[in-house]
Amino acid sequence: DDVNFYASFIKKFETIYLRPLNVDELKEYILMNFELDNETATKFAEIFAEYTGGISAVVEIFSSYLSKIETGLLPNSQIEMIKFEEILNRINLLSKAQRKILDILSLEQEAIEIKILSEFFCENISPHLDELQRLGFVKIENGKISIAYKVLKNYINETIDLETRRKIHLNYAIIYLNQSNWEEIADKILYHFAKAKDRVGVEKFAEKGIEKLILRNEFKKAIDLCIEVFELLPDYLKESFTIKLADLNLKVGNYAETINILSESEDLQGLELKSQAYFHLGNTEEAVEILKRAFKSAETLYEKVRIAVKISQIYASSGEIENAFWILKSFENEMIIKLLLKTETLGDFYAGLGIISQMKGIEK
Image 1 (cartoon, rainbow, N blue to C red):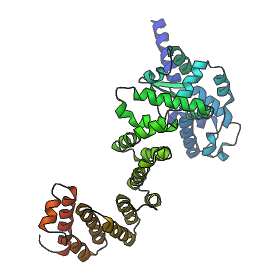
Image 2 (image 1 turned 30 degrees about the vertical axis):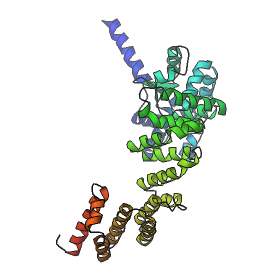
Image 3 (image 1 turned 90 degrees about the vertical axis):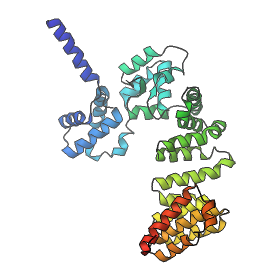
Image 4 (image 1 turned 90 degrees about the horizontal axis):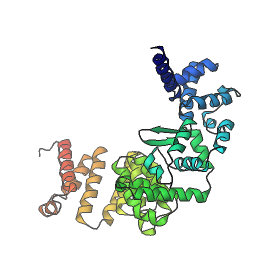
C-alpha cells in the first residue's frame, strides 16, 4: 500500500544520504558546485574522499571553506590544515566520555574493535557511540570503529596533552596484551609501548613485534617501528636492531640508506648487507672489497664458504667467469662438503658451481 511504499522509500533515501559518498559522486558534486576542469575536479574529489571520508555533512562544510578561496591556487598539502569552525564547535559540546572516545581512537593507526575500545571504560559506551555516529564523527563497520575522516583525527590527535597521550598508549598496550591472540598483535603492543616511552615494554616486545611485521611482509611499517623504538632499546639490542633496520631497508630498495645505517659496522652480517647494497647500486668493485673484508673476519668454514659464494656470484654477474669459477672450485673437497651437509650454503655452492661451469662451457 501507499504507506508501506513511502516508508520504504524514505528509509532507502536516508540510507543513500547517510552513507559516505564515493570519489565519482564527490567529483560530480564538485563539478556542479565549482567552476573547475575535469582533471582538477578529479584531484579535489580524491582529496575530499581522503579528508572527509565522503560524509555528506562534512563535505558541505569542506565546500563552504573552499568556496571562500581560489581553489586553483590551493596546494593539496594545505587542505589538511583547514580548521572547520562548525566541527570544532560540535566537539566542544561533546560529553567527557564522547571526547575520551575520540582521543582514544585518534591514537590508534587503524580502526579498532568496539570490544577493545569498551575496555577503556567502566560504563556502557553504546549510547555515546550512537551519538558520535549520528554526528558524523565516527565510522562503525563490521564491529570496528574509527574516526570518520582524516582532518578530524589529526585535529583530535594534536590537542591531546602528553600525559593523557602516554596513558592512552599504555592502556592500549596492556589491553592488547590481555587478549587471547596477543602474539598475533605483538606489533601493536610494541607500537603502543614505544609511544608510551615504556622501556620495559619495548625491551620485552621489540623482537616479537618487528618479526610479526616481517612475517606479514609489512617491511615499511617495520622500518618505521624500528626507528620509533630504537632509542628506547637497551644497549644489548641496539646492534642487532641496526642490522635488522639495514636489512629491512635493503628489502624495500633503500640501498643508500642501508649503507648509511651500516657506515660504522664491521659486523659480519652487516658487511654482507652493505656489500649487497653496493652491488644493487652498481658498484661491484666496492661490493667485492667489502666481502673480502668479511671473508678475512669470518671465523668458521661455513661463514667463509657462504661469503665465497657471494663473491663468486658478483664476479659471474660482472662477466669475470674465470675468477668466479676458481673461487668456488677451491672449496670443492670432501672434508668441506661433509661440514656443509644439510645447510643452505651447500645448495647455493653447488648451484653456483653448476651455473658458472655451464657459463665456462665445462660439462658437469
